[in-house]
Image (cartoon, rainbow, N blue to C red; front, side):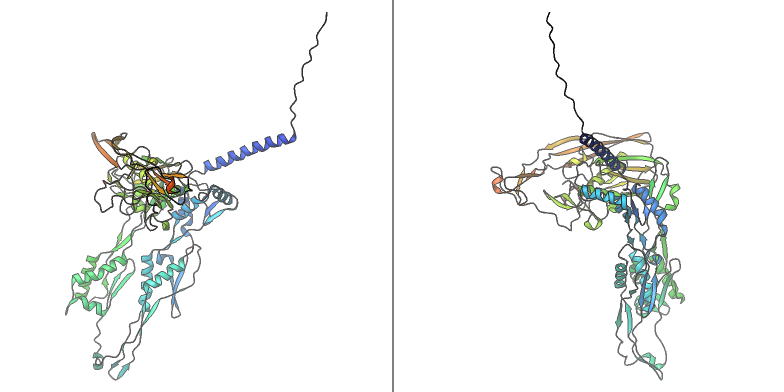
Length: 628
């Protein structure tokens, strides 16, 4: 019997070298680092990056509202610049109280928030690392109340001004003449503002008072002074003791308003016309408080304290001056009254802010860096805004001028029937979101315009709101019966935005329907434009076609046992696709070359898309510049 021996082939053995373990270890470390970086970015969503300080106060890891609250408490005694004015060897100090100089803490918080969120991804990451390792300090800007500074200079000017005097003879005594001195208040104010430029506190050099010399007048051939009798007309002072304000009517001005010398009687209309420019100088607008609401604790935090204003009561001052003249009194009463702020930080407990009233959301993932920055800048302007009961919210009032000077950047806008580059693209993402919050809350919409064509950023058509500063606005009325606090939340990393309204939720239910689309109009044929930025043989699409349509949304409000229904109609125009080609040879057959697209003028304040052609007659053009 013969046996067969089978030989099995040995299995190959995998040998691990030290290099293999090094690669594996490096891979694990890389994944760990990547996880840490991802966690770092996620944790800092809506937070200021770690290591950032404002005037030395740590704000890293805080939301903008929390940072503003901390700075408001910590920097209440932040050292402000000290100024002085000098003339003729004399100096007059101008303190922060005189000029109402204050630090712009909201702007400093916004600058702190933007650390690590600007420029290219590499530059952003480098700024984050630099802040975390070495610290990045933001120095607050200094804001100046120009009207109050002008008043302070006026008080100094009153001491310096000297009238020119001609030579005269008082009996046997010859009184020599002298030149006069006048003060250029406006030039002095501008010089002081220029001296204040810069963010570092401390002592500034004295600012020279801007003066002009008044030539000495020629002597009069005959004067009452020759008789030895001084018959000069008196001046009249108008004084307010509450604010320390004082104005003077010189003899010539006083004489111009009198209709009778014995007894002196002033013409009320002339006096009123004289006082009106003073009223503009005296007026100081009140400043409303800005607040923050913590939904977890229900606490309301003061982000910006309120400040009363003041105004001249012209009619009461006219009466006071006429009575003083008739009674021979000097000075007369300057009637200045306080103007209370609509949102008083001393009455926060009475405002009834206790819960979420409504929210609105929108999405902007995929937006350019410039568009995202415009969204963040615009949203920050509404941080802590409070609307009193019955008050009208105006988007343009708070967003102010959409310009490069206010930090807005170039982005795509709609200029006529073309896409161009202009300032402010993305701001309508903010107006649309706050509109949705107001609409969901059932609040009366005072002014709203839809975009000129359907914009993909806003989802289904019919619930968007465009603005065009300063003429096209979005407004709503706070009808909740309590104060309404606005809280914008922007997540730039994930491209989401929300506006939360806090206050006292009224006893009503609001139902918003899906949009009903009708009257659909096909998009026009595409437009082809020869553009030097495109290489020959290439084609680049810069606009996408959109059909025209009417979108109708119904809002049903159930309140107090009654139901009311409101219809919101938005008409969108059709929009054509636009292509850029390198040369006329690249144009499709039978398509003529269009004129090159124009850029929007640099001085034009533009934001998102234009109102539709059915805009009500408000003096606004049917198609102003706009941006998606």
